[in-house]
Length: 265
Image 1 (cartoon, one colour):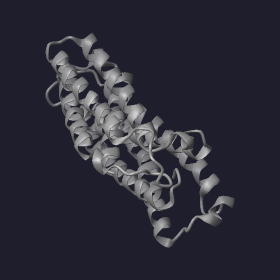
Image 2 (tube, rainbow, N blue to C red):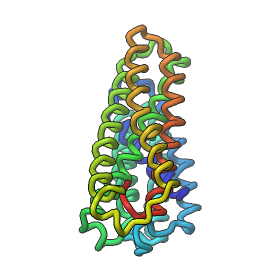
Image 3 (cartoon, helix red, strand yellow):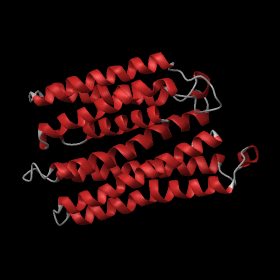
Image 4 (cartoon, rainbow, N blue to C red):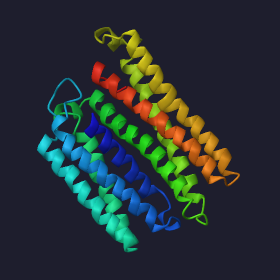
């Protein structure tokens, strides 16, 4: 679970780097961000030996060794990217960001499912949901850290923070869509629920996932949008910090549901 959490967060952070207006953000922000993903990728590499199959105890496409090679490549890319941003080689730094995003997406999708599961509806929903979880938590963390960066670069345009907040809203919308589809197909009221042992504990986890990890994010996005009209980046940062906590709560309860029920909830 630690490895999957780390690679999901790397995926979300790196995709945010790719979609935000990098030209309006000072290089130091990306240098530090890549040091963050460097630490996460090292953690994922060390903990990969404890990675277990997520659906039906099937062996995932990526073996432990293959996953360690992939996360090791992400670590190397993160280190090189931090060097490039330090040297103000912005184009090379951006290339590292796109490489990290591609590698981490592959790691997220292929470390949880077998080849046979990837060809099923459940498996397709599962890996897309895994990536959406990473996008949600990654955009919340990136937004919070970007808000703090305005303390060191107060003259920086607020457009990047607005863009990250918008991306957080889109990520929450994607999570809402995928979670709704999963509930209709595999939820307690669906035809497939007869073979799934739903308990009161699962309903508590499901409620927490929706309230914190999905609906709560829409409230955070709305509040940040209103605050940013006043150009108060530090107040927006405080709200995004709450968003990070809610995103992690939602992600962890979603992981518990997946582990217990083998469903893409």
